[in-house]
Image 1 (cartoon, rainbow, N blue to C red):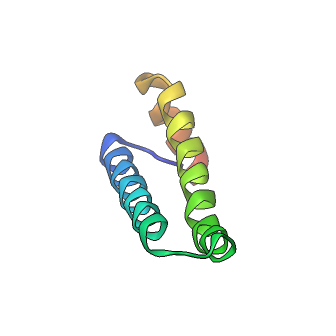
Image 2 (image 1 turned 60 degrees about the vertical axis):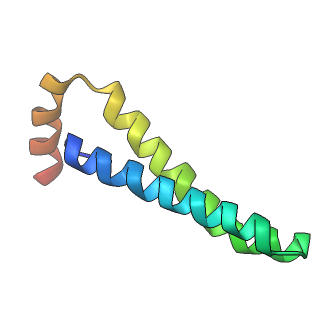
Length: 73
């Protein structure tokens, strides 16, 4: 789980990187089946990271310190 704004920014950067990889594959891959196989892992990882971002943003900052402490025990 994302625990602070620095991790949030790193996750957003990683998502943008994966999106650019997918954009590049859309341009160079000529076979639709190969394209889907190539991007499926990127898309799954983007979905997972977006869920982490959603969880992080749904928690008020004052609640984060309590959850971090609970997660480490």
